Length: 266
Image 1 (cartoon, rainbow, N blue to C red):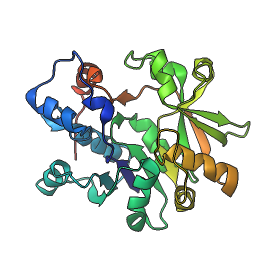
Image 2 (cartoon, rainbow, N blue to C red):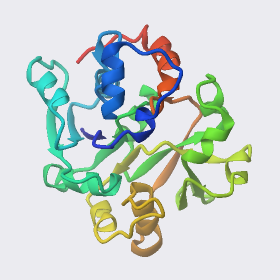
Image 3 (cartoon, rainbow, N blue to C red):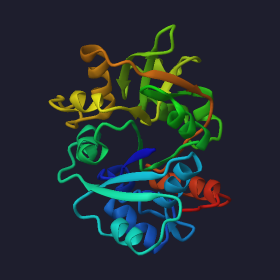
Image 4 (cartoon, rainbow, N blue to C red):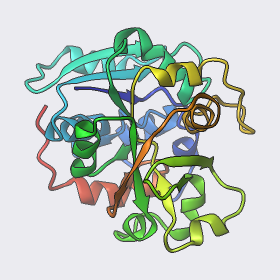
């Protein structure tokens, strides 16, 4: 099955200075905001994401990159991948994640697919559940699961999206980066880490989307539009597990430690 990795972001949070000690190669990657290419244990972070997808049963990946990317395309052109077929799509302008997904639409066609962030390392079990789903779906992370390993502090949850789920287990709304932090303080809150299973109907929701208050065409808002205006039904799959988030320089020590034991096989 096909997965799409969104790796064309500008990485502005990673570019912001901090007191975290980085190697010269890490400092260079951070300065460019290249989260997918950020080196950990001698390999780019994207290697870990790709290996997790292969572990979850995926065999084809499309990586959406920036026009100025040379690092990722050069790396994967120079090595043989035993478990994955890899493609690249170029997002010409950094307009947001919904626009990035449209960049990959010609390759995706009418196939169902899973889309995920390039700066998150998701649990393999969750990725497998999305691959095995027989309808559009998303992972609905529990508050306790995301906070369990200590990397993500409670205040950070408001930077993600909150999912409203009906009694049948389907999304009724997606609230991106909620202004009211009380929404993420609820014990039973369901939180999105922007990993989805879609079919081609999502493209209509992405086209003509209005920019968010942050000036971007954001995928969670396309999902919200699809649910509200187009009758799109997306199942919320509950999951009680952490996600490694490589968004800031301060994340580097923790993520480095947790990935040390991961057996990367591409």
